[in-house]
Length: 131
Image 1 (cartoon, helix red, strand yellow):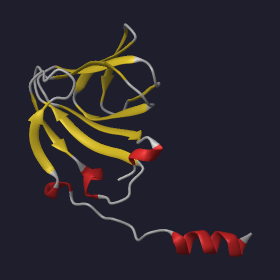
Image 2 (tube, one colour; image 1 turned 45 degrees about the vertical axis):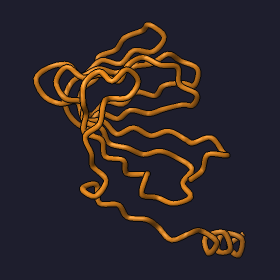
Image 3 (spheres, helix red, strand yellow; image 1 turned 30 degrees about the vertical axis):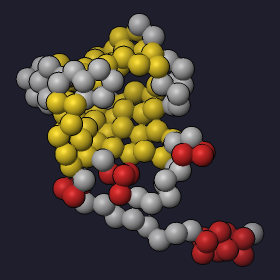
Image 4 (cartoon, helix red, strand yellow; image 1 turned 180 degrees about the horizontal axis):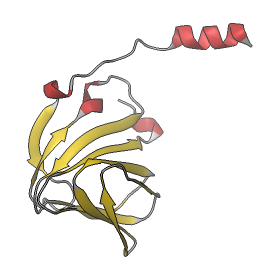
């Protein structure tokens, strides 16, 4: 058992450390272009990845428009206030909260209040889409 674990560990590629200041850019909020947002495209810097991991700041009045997701997603709120919708059900979000959204749901999230809504977003890539 230990030999197998060591063999698997030896086969893993080296870790990748990403400084978010090197992957930050201003871009429209996804799925509807409801305002501009600050995107930290962290996993874009990782070769042969199997998941997306991003940080996004939705500024005042911005939103990720509703769309049907093809995989489970997790939104973790770092700061600010917002509202998430999943198949018509709405819930308030604030710092320290996370929402787990299921594949096939029609989802969206919007910023509320006077401060940006800063999120970590993570989801798996389809097996054939590993980059």
